[in-house]
Length: 246
Image (cartoon, rainbow, N blue to C red; front, side, top):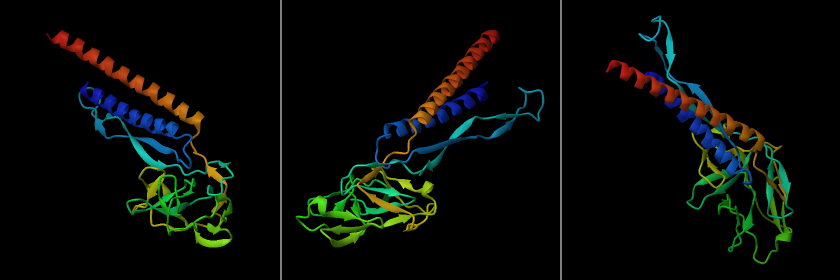
């Protein structure tokens, strides 16, 4: 009986992890460049049945656990904004940025702007790496960003937005604000393929599928409720057993 309670508790914890991931995806459905979380399940250790079963060869499972599969980096739709400093990435890859704490990071959030010191920065305050300096007094309408990342200010070349990719994007570490840092499992950033380009005046939408996310949420909720019923039933059976023993 105790094994059954333990198994049900493990299943509830796994479904809670799934609910947390889906809730996060839904909360970021309108976040520029957001990539949805991937959560799967695997079964836990199997044990020999022993006395509760009719055969010592029988095996009893001990529940399931949630597996974080990284993120799905499927392309999100590019929405037109016509703002010169907005750029959407078409293809696989990221922009190389430097965070406020000095770490090198990667992002697909192309909601850029020029800060008070003339630097081209992201919406979360990350600087282009290497730094791109827009000459003082240059109006936004005079900023042009080419498909290869070349930035022109009033016709003058002031730098290039670095487009890079990694061997295994699913193993990048999320550090919040739509930024990721490379890990040993993801591999180091290298130059992106030629078919990865920037589209000026656009932003990439979240790749969260609202219909699928709602379906996943309902499924996880129903499974959670069913598992909780199993715990309730087991508790009632233990109460009956204790009553008989007395």
